[in-house]
Image 1 (cartoon, rainbow, N blue to C red):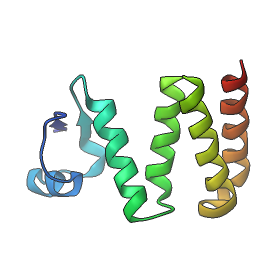
Image 2 (image 1 turned 90 degrees about the vertical axis):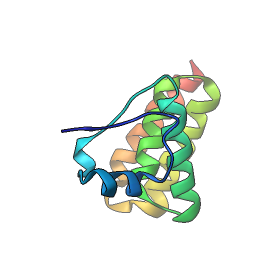
Image 3 (image 1 turned 180 degrees about the vertical axis):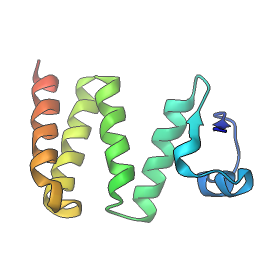
Image 4 (image 1 turned 90 degrees about the horizontal axis):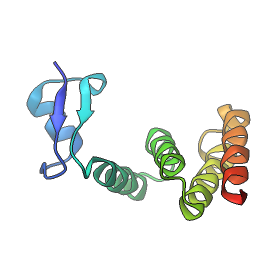
Length: 107
């Protein structure tokens, strides 16, 4: 059974999952502010653990989803960091994503 989180939920994601006894695969986020909450959570994870590949990957996806020039540029910068520092084993993938975001930002 998926765990449903509202933007107003308190506690960290880990605490909520442990409380509900669910795995990360069972997580869904609901509410109008879910995207904002998820962005803030991923940024806090990156601030606490620089180079966290899953959090950076989610931020890249969120930047692409928003689609403004500013967020696309931010996503491209994250892709560069992923390709050169944090996730070098998948550097070709992150370089491709960077090129996609950069070309979308230029359009």
